[in-house]
Length: 224
Image (cartoon, rainbow, N blue to C red; front, side):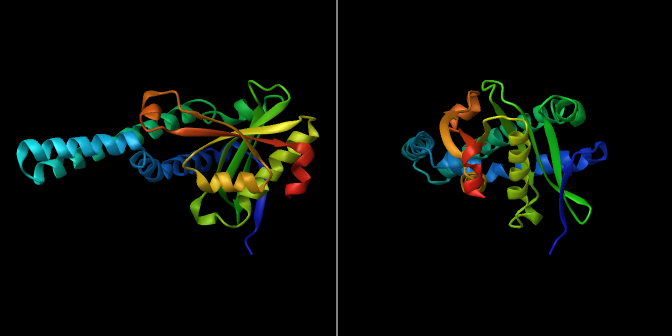
């Protein structure tokens, strides 16, 4: 049985935390690409390109090449979207975690260690639009250490911290492609409260939906 320890972030954890976040975000690129391919507008565009080129060129090779190029461009669009998000996060709150989370009121950042190695993380801070709630952020566990109960332990740590400070609930936002995360949060008692499309152009093109969850702490004990 692995020796799992949840503890507060220390400055020497910075590189491991940034790597864990970057790898976790990058994992969503393939599933986001598949999500885009399943959208009716995407399928319609590909079909129109294919039919138009077959009709005009009387060849199957040109449509195949054209569709391949369109798909490659679409995947690069997704890669760029995630890279922008990663760069923004690394330049903002993850640039100086101690200042952002540990020195601010009602905020904290934890890491999960297994045999002395940082393999997971989570943070929380006051929710901007809900004064009675804290927001869970930056949840990530390295792929090599999943299915070990680490993510649930991190969720419970945030819930305990939130309850001790007298907040009514925890909010979080995850994406439509993060199906494992959705299952985790729902297993922990979180309830889906709204869905919305990412406002930037790439998000609208691929209909990339974000999902907001809420955990009311008076119910939290039943889910554990």
